[in-house]
Length: 65
Image (cartoon, rainbow, N blue to C red; front, top):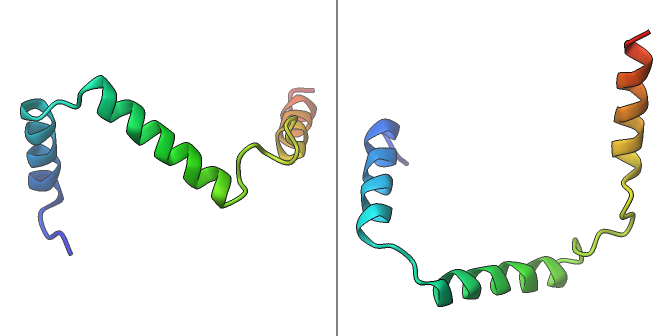
């Protein structure tokens, strides 16, 4: 467990600054994330329009009246 969160975040920023990722590494991370999402069956979404989004939009528009 991290006791000093501010110290940890500062250390992470410093590490990322001193160890930048190459384009190939970034692509590999993206492809791995995509493969994981497909394996978990969360991508592509089953409802591309998103019923939750439509409901939230309707509620927001109704509240503006």
